[in-house]
Amino acid sequence: MTILCRCENIETSEGVPLYVTGVAQVKIMTEKELLAVACEQFLGKNVQDVKNVILQTLEGHLRSILGTLTVEQIYQDRDQFAKLVREVAAPDVGRMGIEILSFTIKDVYDKVDYLSSLGKTQTAAVRRDADIGVAEAERDAGIREAECKKEMLDVKFMADTKIADSKRAFELQKAAFTEEVNIKTAEAQLAYELQSAREQQKIRQEEIEIEVVERKKQIEIEEKEVIRKEKELIATVKRPAEAEAYRIQQIAEGEKVQKVLLAQAEAEKIRKIGEAEAFVIEAIGMAEAEGMKLKAEALQQYGEAAKLALVLDALPEIAAKVAAPLSRVDEILILSGESNSAVSEANRLLAEIPASVRAITGVDLTKIPLIQKLTGTQE
Image (cartoon, rainbow, N blue to C red; front, side, top):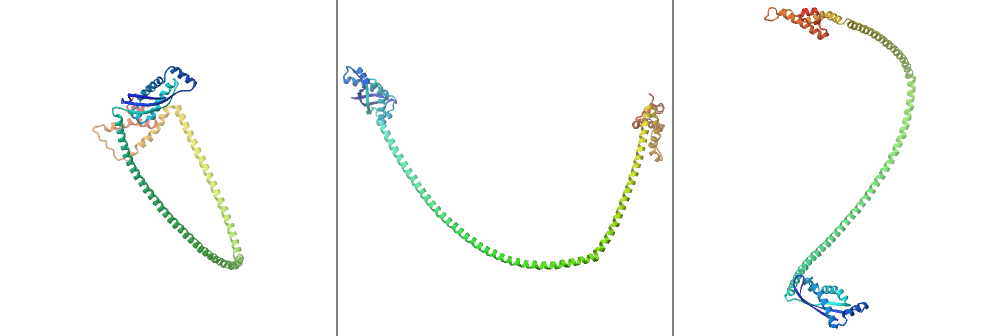
């Protein structure tokens, strides 16, 4: 069966009202189960009633699909649009036992001149694309021409390069041949010179051998002459000289032994004298040590009285040494405004003596009553 579908004033996704006409070819399925479904669905209805049911189903899906597409999608790709309607509607009509054999878009138009404007736009786009195509073709032609020129130059360069390589290879080969010829010539010249040198060497070697033989003969004669003179010298000079040398050697050996014995005796004398001096020094040291020890024991035993006695014994010597510089003075003048300045100066000097003695010997003279009376210090 052929079913003509018309959808009028249906808005697309862009809101443009379109009028679409489609043609569907359908048939009742012959499979037993699907045929039973079709009989159940259309039992008691005529052919027009069946077409109306199928038409309503197809128009419903056509309207819903038109609302999701743009005008360009519908107009430019009608086959895809018809395929989409067929795929969407096929399950619904299939449940009624009807199979869609085909569905095509017969006509699409509008009453607001959208499609004509779209055609103008497409025409302008085509012209634009044509201009772009011409420009791109010219550009491609220029590029291709440049590429051809470049390829030509590359080929020419490669040809020139190959020619230069061939020339260079020829020159190198020629130089190699020339070098080889020169080498062979030099080797031949060198071989000639070596052979000439070998011949000269052989001649010189034979001359040297002759000279060696002559020299050997001369040496033999000279050796015999030397042996003769040596025997003569032994008889006339060497034997008497050896005897005189032996006599002098014996005398020298005797003098050497005498000097060694004298040196040993002198060393022994020095050693004995040293031992004696060392013994004397040791004895003196031991005596002095013993005296110091006894003096220390006496000082320890008698205490301050012994120390005082030693100090008193040493005082005359200390005074003599202190006064020694004064013995070389002719006259001493004491300048003072006081009449008894000499006496007071003497007292001052006496007062400083105990401190000096204490600093030298460690003995405090101020403890002695006599010194206390002289210095005027009394505890």
